Length: 380
Image (cartoon, rainbow, N blue to C red; front, side, top):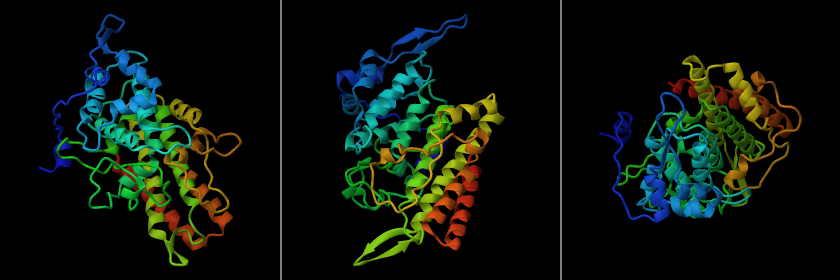
């Protein structure tokens, strides 16, 4: 039976235990419990003190949660994010989320290290093991992790590692340059989210990860901002024909297909996110859709227009989604959350500023529209 089919039927094998540092063993075993208040008191899980301390020490967190090139220490992350810890005590979800986020990301302007990228891969795989909502307070941190690896996340939908010898959960630019994006920062390590390990049964299903966090308005806002920021970042690096510049000898050729795919993935992701919100409102997970929309607006940083002139910089992935929003007041909640038209507005202003042909803009509108609708239809 193929792994994906087997997984969707509910099976994921637990891997064998390995030798672990004491602090990590405490994190993985994590048996600290407390009783919740009320007549129907039941045990809740508390992050062990040694693990919680990693929230304030990113370097130590990376070292503790790094699964290694061969994923032999993947069980550390898998156990830490296991379903046994879903019922966390108040405030513990945020601590757990901060530990994982700090272990997988650097600061502003800092390229990812290989260790951080491996942690990001392990976290995404471990979060794919279950479908239940995460502990309260954890979802925004998971959303920020995905935002920090936005290029890797987006290209995973249709790309696989390009080098035949690249069979690791993360790689350097030299190892992964064929699939690390059209405008990579060469110091940035990339998380190979499409990598699958049969030995340790790791796999990443972003549909499931995003499904676990999308009903949290702050997490929703982080993802929604990330997709729109990436859309603007990508547009402003295209050439005057609306394609990806390709250096060949002493002249440029254009790859419109690459632009279509990447811009389409942003639209697809937004369509999927919007549909998840609609489904959650329909089934009662979101009890007040209007209040949810207002909360998203409050957490969102605003709108992200593309620069009016060509941009050639290649920032680390994390900085793509840290870009500053446009000045001025945010749009009303209804206008801000109309994802398709938000993309159209950015596209058309970019086309006007860069004098892109009307035909090319029309083609991209069709791509955006189709991808947005496909994203909505893929959500069940």
